[in-house]
Image (cartoon, rainbow, N blue to C red; front, top):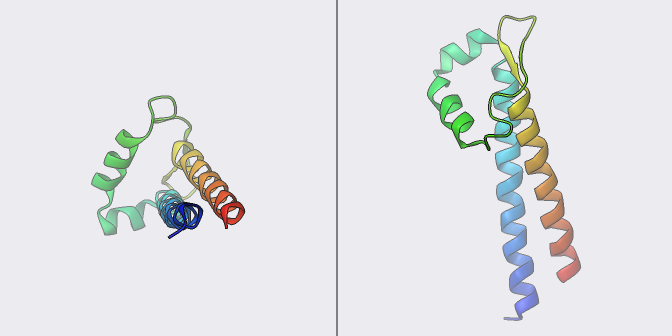
Length: 98
């Protein structure tokens, strides 16, 4: 197998992983705006673990109360944007390697 083709495949797989993680952060960001959905699913432990996994620079940054009674987490939204940016970058480099 050619080294360039192997690198392109690896970057494509990494791109899909970044995209799925970005989608997960998007879903969590929306779900936390509604406290009943978050309470019913019992995702508080997941949210705490993900919050601790974020870099200290943005961890807990921009917590805004939503009009629905929940909280909008700007740190999760920023992480989502970063993951989608990495997804795009990996996909573009993968296309250029092929």
